[in-house]
Length: 87
Image (cartoon, rainbow, N blue to C red; front, side):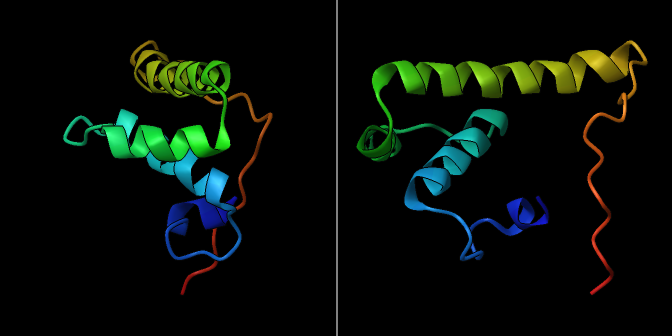
């Protein structure tokens, strides 16, 4: 999980995973765009329905990242991510 923070440099992710992570970042950051080149890369690895599902999953997580804190909904501890050791 910790490798996600440095996915561009990490050797652990496949080409499909890298495309999905790039897509997720571009959807999430309002100053970035999803261009035709990225869609072409996504289509190498995913079907159209899979891209729609990926888009929905990213959009839902973005929704929750704004919705939950606003209403004071805290993490329930189902997926505890261990802290990274200091470098």
